[in-house]
Length: 402
Image (cartoon, rainbow, N blue to C red; front, side, top):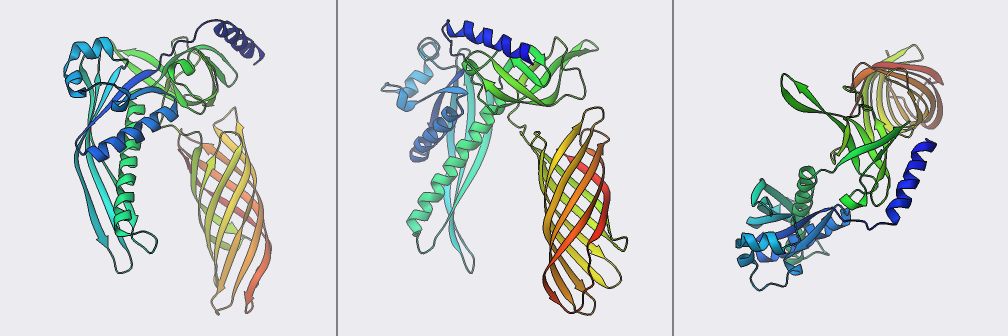
């Protein structure tokens, strides 16, 4: 780990003595159609893209030209004089409000239909074209008039459209970088703020393979940008690829904005409590790749005379077992147990349950799960005669991660 930080320090020392060249892609945003929506959309989209720091952005307001349309039709002028790589042309095709009513509520829903084209200015090639829709809603109430509701719903629809366009641009223009070195869970790459990388960006490993004379790319793994400098960055490996060796010299990294820095884990399982009650449970939680697991679960238990319903919050330390694709969790359940008996007796308990569970994954997404714990119950409310005691519990079933 020390060597990778030494190399980064030397590169940083060298890069500080040289001018940093801004290699980010640049966009010119141009809208047609409804002028009021178009101007608002340009501003929202420009703000969104600039906040990301990944692109340089121009809009009509940045160009001191009397006739932008004439400039757009002059291809030679575009190539020689515009400091932009791509034209983002947005045509507002339809925009209309619609009043919706129920017995209790009244609201305005504003809808926008737009066609988005992305043109490479140097060649005039249209590299992307898609119809996008958006909507915004605002309710009429004591504090919001009919006019204000239309106004807010239109701004909401426009903002949602800008977010959709920004998402599409991020999918279209992904940052690619070469790997300088790999040590432990860290990857040092040859790109940084100069191409638009920011802390928290998600990447994946990519390698090009040949099969029967045809080349194709294999994608795998998950990385997050932890440290970003002017010309290089340090990525942390959250997941290694399953289908190829990421240490191969031909592997590079590619931005993937659809990846998440957390992993969703769900499970469905059989439950036994006190060797008397049987039932089923469902759990959903999140793994932050830093050994912290948080989640919640529902459990339903039955015996001859009672029905139990448990709702629990789960917090635990998740140990990633390196030799097998498995995890071991040490944690605690904090929740509420509700018990109803056939004779109309009932009780509600506050519950604390230390647990240990083990998950073994058969493939990348699905696996087997077993958990053991002990319930400590503290009565909150009791009606009638309910015989419920602290009990051992065990669960077994299937787990899925995404």
